[in-house]
Image 1 (cartoon, rainbow, N blue to C red):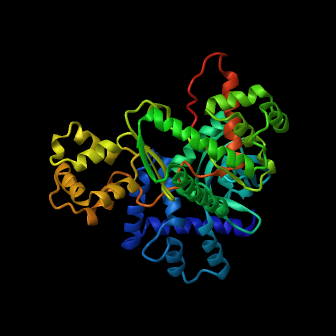
Image 2: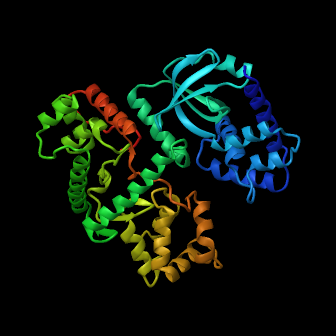
Image 3: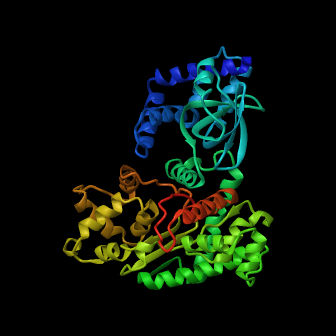
Amino acid sequence: MDAILERSHQLKQDLTDFVYDAEGELAQALESYAALKSRRGSGDNFQQELIIDSFITEGQVGDSSPLDLFIQSHQELSESDRELIKSWEHTFIGLFAITKILPDGFELRNWLTDKYYIVKPNNAQKLKEMSRLKEGEILLTRISPVTDSYWTFSGPYTQMGKLGKPKLAVAIGNFKDNHKDHLYGDAPDLLEEAWQSVGIYHQQFVEFFGTDEVTMPGYQLNKKIAEFQEILTKKRLEEAGIDPSKSLGEVAQEAGLGDEEIKAVAEELGADSQAVSQMFNNKSGTSKMVMPKVDLPAELRKAEQVTAISHPRWGQMFIPTYFKIKAILEADDWQSVEGAEKVIRFYLEDKSINAFIWHRLAQQYSTQLEKVLQTFLERPNFQLQNDLDTLLQEHNKSIEPELPEIASVPIHLHNLFQEALVEVSKSKPKGKSQKQPAKGFQ
């Protein structure tokens, strides 16, 4: 084992002890960080270890990081030790496939970004423990740089075994839900392009609808969204250099797929068959990313009213109760509105209602919303301007936008999900259509 790899193990142990034994500001920062992160997870040992490991490289204590504080308090560290510790700022979590077994480690592929890494356990015990892992298995773990040519495991790992495409699609969807801040942790270019796509989608939404907010019956909005999707699909095909006027047979031949395969995926997605084939045949395109399909969820298509709202950062929202919350805030006596408390509780507790929606309502109905919350929360001193964000965080709502569902996704992931749908559709009895439960980039 390389000397620097052995040294990384000792330094990481010292660093972990430093954080665990800390008092004052560092201890308070860890407590706050852990409380925030614990809201989203299962609370098991893996998550608890992961939170500590993440805090060490990502936490903030005032203007400093735990890494900075450790270096400052250990003046005896050599320059090479300091450089190694500082490099751990680049530690990230990923969903990795084992592509090669090496004598002292592994070659891993980060499924989220399609990047490859040589990763070595930094002590004999971990190397022995991980020797049972096999090529093709999936690991959820964090990795830290050691040299320019290889990395090491940071913190715990979860062994997920070998996964077929449908189960891998589910695992990636779960990763997206649980680690939104680290979706493209080692690919800032993909992250930037994904965020840019949200802004582009917003522009296209406003161009099509003439505004950033529309409300109409579910069946009517479904038709309008289908028209909007058709326009987006046409633009996508043109950008990929595919003639939208080509027949399904021509596109299938170019994509190397049979008509039945394309139709099967199109049926699952409710998408245009040509758009589906383009997803498989996107290797000729210049972009690394693909925009997902815009779709009104099936359960909203029969809703009395659905409000569609678009934002350049928060993305696309479909809300079937927006007209109800507005009616409550416009009423002279909000408590006389049937089901008012249930609606307010839903807006606080349901993850589909994000902080942007609350701030939009606060901007439009500041006085009314403040009075409603004072009564509902039984907090007469509640002030919208000072207390709203704290209230939202208490209900597990992020104050800053997280990369929304409408953001573009890497082509390799998009193709994975379409191929997973093909596998699922082939396994179903003919004539029966069941909803595929897989999560992922839809």
